[in-house]
Length: 556
Image 1 (cartoon, helix red, strand yellow):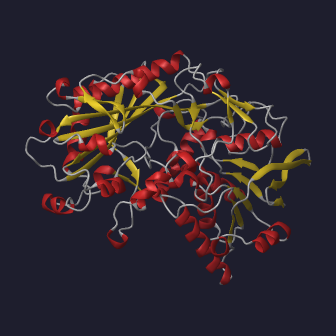
Image 2 (cartoon, helix red, strand yellow):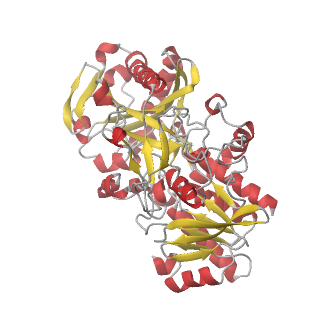
Image 3 (cartoon, one colour):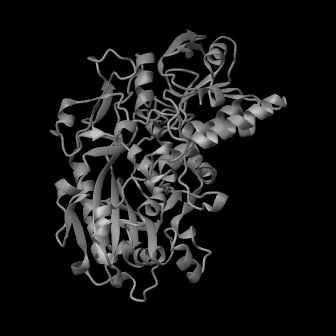
């Protein structure tokens, strides 16, 4: 892989000693690809170096690979370059005891994500600078195109009932079940306290129908390598510059000095030697927490880094309703899926947002269809277990991954320096301490989820709803709702806000995505969020990375 796609040892030595780059991009995930593609689209002669801390792992999203690759999700594929405060890790501050980690491989988390890509509306971006909101809106369409976003109700839209029945013999169908769930939500969803909009789930899953594949979760490795291949051909023809990529290279620190009265990044100290930056702009596209650690160590005089922290806390609720209640006419095929996005707020305030990622499954033969169903599952990060499906003959199973907004304005939650850790890539301390607002949001989103299941998705009433109690592979169905301890997940996802942008000087990043401690360092990703919202952040991250590319190219 190194010799075919990435810089060899000799080429890396030459890159450090001879090449003059326009942009050095740290990371190879969504934002890195979005930035590089947009820059090279505007000017194929732009010289870009991508630096990836990890090695090559997966060629694409694990869900597109054979069934055993499901075991790559979580566990050993994550690393945690920070320390948790003792009170958080011991559960003394509330249910949350840890934060999901980074994926330290080529492509980052893009190979292991849920692929839900909702567009936040104006109210959901409350607290954001108007200029940033407008920038995101300008680029939503191109961001969705890059990620190949399609709504669940469009996947099998053009197919007749007979076609769906035939297709349903070989793969899941987004058809009658999808339309049924959408219709129920559209008619009655807003009757549940806090719920204000529902829609078919936007999923980054549209394939280009190659070899009959029409559902393929998106990841960056293939597109980055294709972009590098295209640039290599343009370079050979004298019509562009190569896109260089180096792997197994960790950036430890940014060297900086004062030039003409302003701080400027001049070189990167890496695990593979020092890389002079020259006139290059440095783009940090490496998630939320690692760039915060890097900037804090490199620019120790800068304040407010990590003083603000937000993320999404999660409830997981699995329920079932008899198929006969939802499909009295017998229109469902043998294997059907549905994916819907349900948004809500607590206390009628967009300061406390939540949403439900609602996946539904009807399967006449779950044992036989296990591999196929997993391949097409809308949210394989949160899906029904084989035991739950095999014990649900005659039922539609609902899996609700419910995400709520951790209060960004809570002084008890932060990501600050860990003075007891001498390693510059890990010397940060994360503390999460839920406050009263967090608990109000969590209570409201759980209650709204039960309301959706019992009042909207069960046409014959609450008595026909059953919940799964116990571990996914060892539990039982019951009319009793799962208790708080069972349904509330002890880990956070979608961390944000540690490098929030704003017009005020106290914001670490300005409205042009420039880190205020330097005149040539720029930030992408969820760390920019002034406040977290509840919507999945990837598509908006990509939109703002594209806007950063436009701004920098436009200034040249």
